[in-house]
Image (cartoon, rainbow, N blue to C red; front, side, top):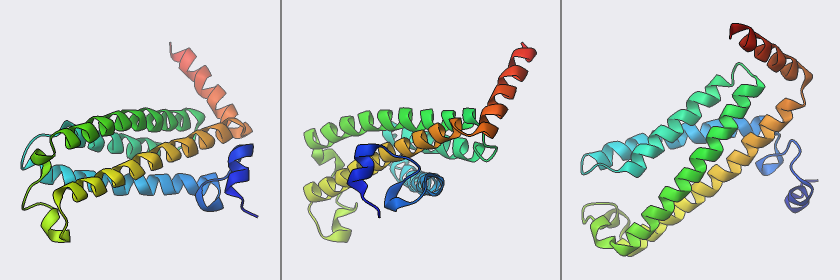
Length: 180
Protein backbone atom coordinates (compact mmCIF):
# COMPACT_ATOMS: atom_id res chain seq x y z
CA UNK A 1 0.00 0.00 0.00
CA UNK A 2 1.25 3.47 -0.85
CA UNK A 3 1.02 5.79 2.10
CA UNK A 4 2.85 9.06 1.31
CA UNK A 5 2.66 10.38 4.87
CA UNK A 6 4.17 7.22 6.33
CA UNK A 7 6.95 7.26 3.71
CA UNK A 8 7.76 10.88 4.58
CA UNK A 9 7.92 10.08 8.29
CA UNK A 10 10.09 6.97 7.85
CA UNK A 11 12.26 8.42 5.13
CA UNK A 12 12.40 7.79 1.42
CA UNK A 13 13.77 4.45 0.46
CA UNK A 14 13.65 3.91 -3.30
CA UNK A 15 10.38 5.84 -3.61
CA UNK A 16 9.55 8.82 -5.77
CA UNK A 17 6.33 10.62 -6.61
CA UNK A 18 3.23 8.50 -7.26
CA UNK A 19 4.97 5.60 -5.46
CA UNK A 20 7.29 4.83 -8.35
CA UNK A 21 10.91 3.80 -7.97
CA UNK A 22 13.73 6.34 -7.74
CA UNK A 23 15.08 5.15 -11.10
CA UNK A 24 11.79 6.12 -12.80
CA UNK A 25 11.80 9.35 -10.80
CA UNK A 26 15.20 10.27 -12.24
CA UNK A 27 13.78 9.87 -15.75
CA UNK A 28 10.89 12.10 -14.71
CA UNK A 29 13.43 14.66 -13.45
CA UNK A 30 15.19 14.59 -16.81
CA UNK A 31 11.92 14.93 -18.73
CA UNK A 32 10.93 17.87 -16.52
CA UNK A 33 14.33 19.57 -16.97
CA UNK A 34 14.22 19.17 -20.77
CA UNK A 35 10.66 20.53 -20.88
CA UNK A 36 11.58 23.49 -18.66
CA UNK A 37 14.68 24.16 -20.77
CA UNK A 38 12.55 24.37 -23.92
CA UNK A 39 10.06 26.68 -22.15
CA UNK A 40 12.88 28.86 -20.81
CA UNK A 41 14.51 29.17 -24.25
CA UNK A 42 11.19 30.16 -25.86
CA UNK A 43 10.53 32.63 -23.05
CA UNK A 44 14.07 34.03 -23.38
CA UNK A 45 13.58 34.57 -27.11
CA UNK A 46 10.30 36.40 -26.45
CA UNK A 47 11.63 38.52 -23.57
CA UNK A 48 15.00 39.38 -25.15
CA UNK A 49 13.17 41.04 -28.05
CA UNK A 50 12.02 43.60 -25.47
CA UNK A 51 14.80 43.73 -22.87
CA UNK A 52 17.57 41.70 -21.23
CA UNK A 53 16.38 39.73 -18.19
CA UNK A 54 19.04 38.14 -16.01
CA UNK A 55 16.52 35.80 -14.34
CA UNK A 56 15.50 34.20 -17.65
CA UNK A 57 19.13 33.97 -18.75
CA UNK A 58 20.06 32.20 -15.51
CA UNK A 59 17.11 29.82 -15.90
CA UNK A 60 18.30 28.75 -19.36
CA UNK A 61 21.84 28.19 -18.05
CA UNK A 62 20.59 26.25 -14.99
CA UNK A 63 18.33 23.92 -16.95
CA UNK A 64 21.01 23.43 -19.62
CA UNK A 65 23.50 22.43 -16.94
CA UNK A 66 20.98 20.05 -15.36
CA UNK A 67 20.25 18.37 -18.71
CA UNK A 68 23.94 18.01 -19.57
CA UNK A 69 24.79 16.53 -16.16
CA UNK A 70 21.82 14.16 -16.31
CA UNK A 71 22.93 12.86 -19.70
CA UNK A 72 26.44 12.51 -18.27
CA UNK A 73 24.93 10.05 -15.82
CA UNK A 74 24.43 7.61 -18.71
CA UNK A 75 27.91 6.43 -17.74
CA UNK A 76 26.68 5.72 -14.23
CA UNK A 77 29.10 6.56 -11.44
CA UNK A 78 28.91 7.91 -7.93
CA UNK A 79 30.71 11.09 -9.03
CA UNK A 80 28.20 11.72 -11.84
CA UNK A 81 25.32 11.18 -9.43
CA UNK A 82 26.94 13.51 -6.90
CA UNK A 83 27.57 16.23 -9.50
CA UNK A 84 23.97 16.06 -10.70
CA UNK A 85 22.60 16.13 -7.16
CA UNK A 86 24.80 19.08 -6.23
CA UNK A 87 23.79 20.92 -9.41
CA UNK A 88 20.10 20.35 -8.65
CA UNK A 89 20.40 21.71 -5.10
CA UNK A 90 22.54 24.74 -5.97
CA UNK A 91 20.49 25.80 -9.00
CA UNK A 92 17.24 25.29 -7.06
CA UNK A 93 18.43 27.52 -4.22
CA UNK A 94 19.63 30.23 -6.62
CA UNK A 95 16.37 29.96 -8.57
CA UNK A 96 14.38 30.42 -5.33
CA UNK A 97 16.39 33.55 -4.50
CA UNK A 98 15.79 34.95 -8.00
CA UNK A 99 12.09 34.10 -7.66
CA UNK A 100 11.85 36.03 -4.38
CA UNK A 101 13.64 38.96 -5.98
CA UNK A 102 11.31 38.93 -9.01
CA UNK A 103 8.27 38.40 -6.76
CA UNK A 104 8.98 41.58 -4.81
CA UNK A 105 9.90 43.47 -7.99
CA UNK A 106 6.62 42.53 -9.69
CA UNK A 107 4.48 43.68 -6.79
CA UNK A 108 6.47 46.87 -6.20
CA UNK A 109 6.40 47.96 -9.84
CA UNK A 110 3.63 45.92 -11.46
CA UNK A 111 2.88 48.60 -14.08
CA UNK A 112 6.21 47.83 -15.79
CA UNK A 113 5.17 44.21 -16.28
CA UNK A 114 1.66 44.97 -17.57
CA UNK A 115 2.03 44.89 -21.33
CA UNK A 116 -1.34 45.56 -23.01
CA UNK A 117 -0.42 43.25 -25.91
CA UNK A 118 0.88 40.53 -23.61
CA UNK A 119 -0.84 37.58 -22.02
CA UNK A 120 -3.72 39.42 -20.32
CA UNK A 121 -5.98 40.01 -23.36
CA UNK A 122 -5.58 36.41 -24.48
CA UNK A 123 -7.10 35.01 -21.28
CA UNK A 124 -9.35 38.01 -20.53
CA UNK A 125 -7.87 38.78 -17.10
CA UNK A 126 -6.48 41.92 -15.55
CA UNK A 127 -2.76 42.35 -15.10
CA UNK A 128 -2.64 41.82 -11.34
CA UNK A 129 -4.46 38.50 -11.67
CA UNK A 130 -2.20 37.39 -14.54
CA UNK A 131 0.92 38.22 -12.50
CA UNK A 132 -0.48 36.30 -9.52
CA UNK A 133 -1.11 33.23 -11.70
CA UNK A 134 2.37 33.41 -13.27
CA UNK A 135 4.10 33.83 -9.91
CA UNK A 136 1.98 31.02 -8.45
CA UNK A 137 3.05 28.70 -11.26
CA UNK A 138 6.68 29.73 -10.69
CA UNK A 139 6.32 28.83 -7.00
CA UNK A 140 5.00 25.38 -7.96
CA UNK A 141 7.94 24.89 -10.35
CA UNK A 142 10.44 25.88 -7.66
CA UNK A 143 8.84 23.44 -5.21
CA UNK A 144 9.11 20.72 -7.90
CA UNK A 145 12.79 21.59 -8.35
CA UNK A 146 13.42 21.12 -4.63
CA UNK A 147 11.48 17.85 -4.65
CA UNK A 148 13.47 16.63 -7.65
CA UNK A 149 16.65 17.66 -5.84
CA UNK A 150 15.60 15.32 -3.04
CA UNK A 151 15.02 12.57 -5.63
CA UNK A 152 18.53 13.22 -6.99
CA UNK A 153 19.91 12.92 -3.45
CA UNK A 154 18.10 9.60 -3.03
CA UNK A 155 19.57 8.41 -6.35
CA UNK A 156 23.07 9.42 -5.22
CA UNK A 157 22.60 7.81 -1.81
CA UNK A 158 21.41 4.53 -3.37
CA UNK A 159 24.40 4.60 -5.72
CA UNK A 160 26.77 4.63 -2.75
CA UNK A 161 25.25 1.34 -1.54
CA UNK A 162 25.87 -0.47 -4.83
CA UNK A 163 29.12 -2.49 -4.70
CA UNK A 164 29.69 -2.23 -8.44
CA UNK A 165 29.50 1.58 -8.39
CA UNK A 166 31.59 1.77 -5.23
CA UNK A 167 34.32 -0.35 -6.83
CA UNK A 168 34.22 1.81 -9.96
CA UNK A 169 34.53 4.94 -7.79
CA UNK A 170 37.55 3.52 -5.94
CA UNK A 171 39.18 2.68 -9.27
CA UNK A 172 38.44 6.18 -10.58
CA UNK A 173 40.10 7.74 -7.52
CA UNK A 174 43.13 5.46 -7.84
CA UNK A 175 43.48 6.36 -11.54
CA UNK A 176 43.07 10.05 -10.67
CA UNK A 177 45.81 9.87 -8.02
CA UNK A 178 48.17 8.05 -10.39
CA UNK A 179 47.71 10.81 -12.97
CA UNK A 180 48.92 13.42 -10.46
